[in-house]
Amino acid sequence: MHTVCIKNATVYDGTGAPAFTADVSCVDGKLHLGAVDGAQEVLDGTGLCLAPGFIDTHSHGDSCLGNPHNSLSRVSQGITTQLAGNCGHTVVVLNEEMYREDKPDLTPSPGLDGPEHFTGFGPYLAYANSLPQVENTAFLVGHGNLRRVAMGFDDREPTAGELAHMKAMLTEAMENGAFGMSSGLIYIPGAYSRIEEMAELCKIVAQYDGIYATHMRNESEGILDSIREAIEVARRSGCRLNISHLKVCGRQNHGVAEQMLALIHDARKEGLRVSADQYPYEASSTSLSSCVPPKYFTQGTEGLVKILRDPAMRRQIRDEIENDTVADFENLVLGCGGFGGIVVSAAPQTPAAVGKTIAAYAQERGADEYEVFFDLLEANGDGAWAIYFDIGEPDLMKILADPTIMVGTDGVITTADGLCHPRAFGTFTRALGRYGRGKGLLPLEAMLHKMTGLPARTLGLAHKGVIAEGMDADLVLFNPQTVCDRADFADPHQLSDGIEAVIIGGEVVYSAGALTGKTPGRVILRGQG
Image (cartoon, rainbow, N blue to C red; front, side, top):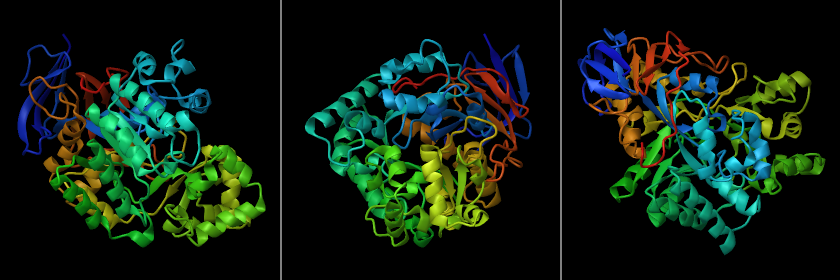
């Protein structure tokens, strides 16, 4: 029997209730309130806070499950459980072409990492369960995967047969324990879908009381309509809805957070089950190709690259971006105030651009900004990523101050030397330090509830998120006076301050600023969490 005892800690139990001082023990992976004799590990909690392990409601960790550096990015900020597979793309439900695209990021598992293990959620579980995991992981299945397998990149409504195929793949995933479906409606092929398709698929999600997590169709000029669309999908289907990384993008749109929150609260008053998560940063991050209108991706990114070899097509795309002539297109370039607000974060074929704004890189080359932008896409394809400075802090703070909005990283990182968004390492500690303690947005018990009890209840993780007798022994011990993020846009891999220890399944997985080597994490299936 393995036991860990945390003595004399200030306990925030995850319910939002005031703190109390207590000893808490972990006995065979479960919590016991009080000390136990002969504990194998004793942690001194004097002057420290003890909370349930943080639950990351918006992770992309499925793409690199079992990767130690990605695990470090999570547990070093107190995360013990992640909901992976967001924004419509997952590493489950793949055809051969999609498998080849995703394989470089997959953690090797000899004999279990062939393409046949990624065609459906059931076969995928053998691979996932074979990997040593630090954190716990639950999974969504991506709508983009379902659509691409059924009908490729076609910009049209699905036929009855294609929709039935998508429903069958989704049903298989739900039957085998997926938590629901995610969508990325600014990405291809999700951008080609219509509300009727989403509602029909979400009826399958609703049958299993799953959750529909959506990266909405537009987070800038069309954000209010996009929220209405997401809510209408929940209304028509009866499913639970989670709006991913709630934010106001585009400098011209700042100031609408209050209206956004009102739509969500009104939907709840109607009886709809609507939730949302947020990362507290003034910049977003996604592929560089997302700056191009969706209609140019009907042959995938490879097709776009071919288009960009034609100067006339470059001029046409430039005109559509500069003059904002494409309906239902989230114009990231204009939203960032031009290329001076877009920092290249990944460009394998043109590494000299990484870490620079496109405007600065163009000036360095003595070239036109749009031509440099197109050159980056042509050279790097899907490998080109960027950070977009398009979010206003007043909107950010208004959303974070809402006690019903959860916290999610939207993060993933696989190596210690790649430029990434600092949210991968600092989301939760930034909420606690900069905005909780520093700006006083919420009392500590309320901020912690957004990270623990609230997401556990929202996702149906019945044994997590609360410090109580018999609950799963997932805990974070931190210093309330020093906890804060250190990761920034120049060095996004810096570990947070103030996280003293993280415990998962009764095992100390993070201490003294490093992973301990323990891998008690497991795959969590819907209904078993």
